[in-house]
Image 1 (cartoon, rainbow, N blue to C red):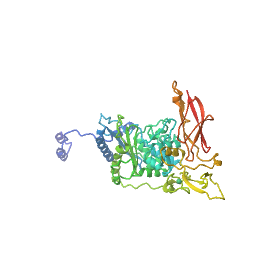
Image 2 (image 1 turned 60 degrees about the vertical axis):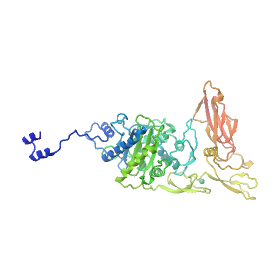
Image 3 (image 1 turned 30 degrees about the horizontal axis):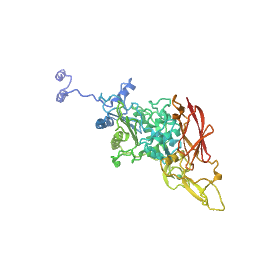
Image 4 (image 1 turned 180 degrees about the vertical axis):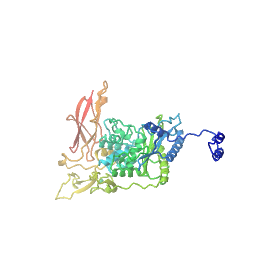
Length: 551
Ligand SMILES: [Zn+2]
């Protein structure tokens, strides 16, 4: 062939000799097969165009594909067969790497499924956004207390991962320990819709327009995909502004959507950056970890392990699981997905030194009560430093550390502002817990301050905390089971009260039913109809709920 070309003067002698010297390939060369899931997506989306220049960083993509394959090889013996990874450039808002599975050609483990677009339960990975909303709406600061006690929401009772409760936790502690109950309480305080609205605003395609998820959404009771979830985390690295990540090189960026203020994004980032987090595997060397703000998640039934992290430059999302949906006990975010996340950050940080986020001018620090996290009152014994936002943080004074007056002669408590010219009164400091926390602490054998009885003449209507009725729930219709005796269908009455309360009195439709201590249960023989349930404490303060019983 070459000789004929030379003889017909189609190539020069030099070209002929050079061509002869070149080795003839023994096999057909393998076509480059890079970023297969991503390329398929691009081909689908831009099918009319002959050439698309994408944002994928090929070196990084190849590197991460290799890391994913190596990690899954290690995990395969445990029945864990796939992983997906997304890397976003926070400055340019571009998708730099997108790995959809461990091995595209592995038919047995459905390697062609695109893991970064597959809708999965997010586990705890949405929690930081509920805390961000709580901060934005002025409900919390990092040290502000949250209740971590059993609570019932119309038949739904969230539990913590370890089924234990702490009574009282700081917001940052609750987020770092990924506690379920405080997160659900916070979402309930936000109005339940808040997280759904946020995900809709960030364009989550897996979330239905109507919010039928309820409060369990914050615990992973919905579906997300890794790409959209990682983009949402990227907003925390971009001062609270959400950008839909670009996938091809076109000029300009779509205008961002503001999800949070820069101050809120900064404070949440500081909380997620705490390195000594209890959910870190014990075997890790903390000193060698790159500085990353991060959160893990594990879905119900151990089907999905998530780990998402960011620094000012990159946001990385990792999902590990099985496309068959099979759960494995080892599928835990902190143990299965986090090592891959940190491997990737270690590689990324080799390329560029990272300067950490700058504190926005709206973020300030102040001293707060160590127990309540609220602005210190005159009787708070211990103070700690806390971040707050100049424009939207709670400003109330500590409601926990209170004083009362005692008549040293009789031992009776005196009403606040009582004045006597004839004798010296003793002022005592005590801790007044919110009702639910007080009754939980007491039930669990933790000592709480009990107030001495009030001077008899003053035991009338008093200001202060009213009882909190836990049961019956006003959001619930108590359906009687036909045929079953009413005795077996009694409805529980239970309320919490402040720790100045010893007894609660229960009334149904104005009739006295009985008395019980705070946290103690009474039972009501159900009568169909709508009833008015009143709970009055021994100080005269009362609460009421509607109880609906249907046949
Ligand atoms: Zn205090």
